[in-house]
Length: 264
Image (tube, rainbow, N blue to C red; front, side):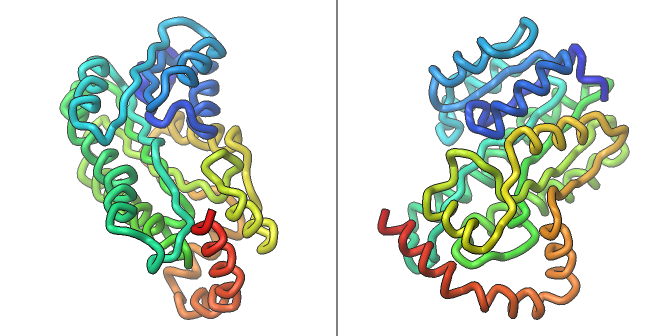
């Protein structure tokens, strides 16, 4: 897909990954419709973007009325990028029913709803695409992230199904699975855990580069970022018992930081 002149709806635009994606898409000549919950970061981002014709809509996508306002503004989009999401490093025993509902609504129900609402428009285009941003934890169940993993497993399965459902249409359906990324979504406990375990952390710009490259591919595809995360995802599918054993050794460390994170 040639992104020049394409109109792209990007959710979660004011976050670390979202901002990096917006800048790279604008540099490719796309016109952006950005959305997030706070106006000031969106306005600041718009002011840094290359080119004209960029707009933003302030919306809490969990509110059906505000979500519809975004859809009304997205009357001529060519590409939907479902980037908005939340993470919560917390043991299930320390989670509330509200935590469960919020995670699944934000990371699963809203992206699926946006795909459903915009699909008739996208199918009218000569060239269109959907990108759902998942996670390495959409392929590896990880202690302390049971709610987050469940949401990302779900969006990965949804994307795979939709890609196959639309395989004979002009709508490309992509899935991108970043690994740990340096953004403000990470708490201090998460950062300390990653340092102690030696987890490699990518920059938002790397994630954005991978996403733009996916969009420029000639056909639908899925991509996981980073090694050894790709290896462990495949190993988890083939021999999950080996991954069980490796993660069991990390469990005391993970529990310690998860409880510290919950206390804060």
